Image 1 (cartoon, one colour):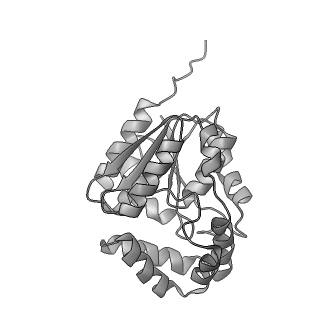
Image 2: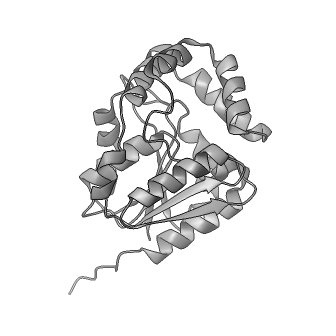
Image 3: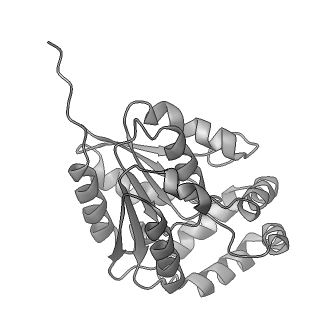
Length: 233
């Protein structure tokens, strides 16, 4: 049975993968990790600690699936475990700053509801389920953790390191997320072994907005990059 480790966007928690936990359990070993400062995992949040939460699973040859700025953690983990990682999926990836650093600090200080409204307007989040998931994540993650995340995101650009990531990679975006599709195209073009696909009918959270299509594309990729099973002599 193939193992899939799911990495949530920073500031949201593993609940965003609940549909995948329900739909894929039994066919795959599904692991949804709460990074430091999220869910029941204590902080503080650092990229080093976040990568450390993934590496025990990746050392066993798991596939890695990440979304949003959780892809920062996933790419760092994939670089560290590239010889053991059969496949990497980056959905709506954000691995470099999209705003000037001071704006990240301002956003981290705003209360959750205004952030949710601004995010929904900017990323075309029409689905009520997605808006509720974003709102829940923002409520659960404390202000100190959000500020720690903002500092890391504002000052981390992984694009120069992508040429070293030779792991087979699937880069996804939702067709109703034009900014995400532009960035996905750029990132896929920098990766030596990547292909890019668009999830029909989805925005920035294709795993929730078009779960069946997302699951079909991801599992097709995972099944196509499964490692041969080892058998004892």
